[in-house]
Length: 361
Ligand code: PMP
Figure 1 (cartoon, helix red, strand yellow):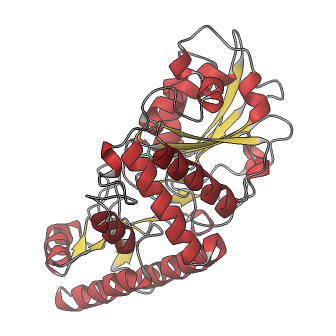
Figure 2: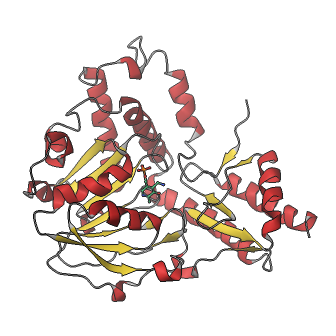
Figure 3: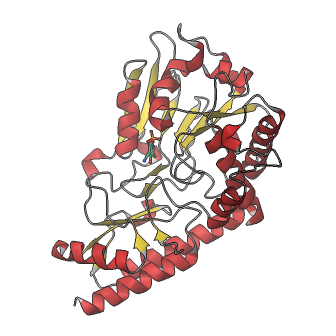
């Protein structure tokens, strides 16, 4: 069996040791004689798993007690709509910072449920810069401020948590959660689709300040109400048990790796290596993003001549480097360097890039 170096933007690489453990336990999990997928979510064994996963996530991120941790479904996209349903009442407005494709989508999906105020946007810069905090036109009466700390397609990342005063800060951390330590207490709500830094798709991890769950918004089915999910330990209905299990294994793996400070150090080194290779290529490769806004997780780059793209993709795949094709919005290439992508993968990529440049002049 051969595993390739996987640079996919998502669903993305999962640590081999996590997959190997899941493989070993697939038919007989925890002495039950059954797969974790075949057991009731109400059973003692699964409840134990769920509690351990939550405890490990709380430990990794230092989640304060006045925050609930939820394991939900629907993808980040469903929560683009569900967040305003829960946090905004009739006539409320919410401020949206639009610094890429996903923030734009979050704002448009929220629009049926809240008056959306685009408080800042970098669309006119093709999202290759970040709207600086000083430029945000915030409304102190807003129900919340929503932003996307890391934009997966454009490869831009905020490296500091913006100060928005007393208005709750809501953040879509889908593509950079758990990549470095985070001061959770600066946020009202954090959410992330699992399929990049946590595990398989079909699971959304949410961390929400408990007082926000008491906001009276509008009539809606219980299944949409975060307060109900929190009161029922995210088991109002059958959760994604398999996703929850793999997320739990990933959290344990992160602890074994030395936690988020260690991951931050590795992620910094990985990104630095790749950006240096791009910047040092004499224009053969280019990253279009403003240097201070560059993402540690998603690195888009172009070749000096797009006629070489097809050869680059074909040869990189043959060299065991998977999923380097860029998003269609930007063209060119993109390498995603999530937690499960080791430094060796980036070394292999950089060495391939240098070799390609020599061979193709
Ligand atoms: N937000 C961000 C930052 C993303 O990268 C993605 C997926 N690429 C989404 C939201 C949408 O996630 P989902 O497919 O889970 O709805």
